[in-house]
Image (cartoon, rainbow, N blue to C red; front, side, top):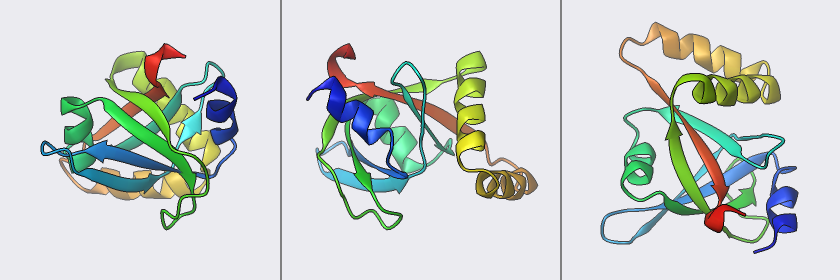
Length: 130
């Protein structure tokens, strides 16, 4: 994978995340994501979602550009996931808010109405640190 492939992915509207179950079975999920200037991609989900549990257990994953239904439109790229907290999580959420205005704000309002619906912010970076 080249850095150019990763940077090209930044212009996509949706990202397909492929994470792995304990038995190695791949699970694909189309997601909103926000790229940062340093090449990090931020995603978010409910903290107790299975994709978050899979990434916590196995941070190695793959990503590809896709449409809102998950139909892949670009090459799969190896990535590493990191569950964030503190200022890094706030930064990731701010980038997501800006990119998906006003839809994400509406979903955020609905999420706040549900007690116990904590969210996880996840950083995705090219595997190998590149």
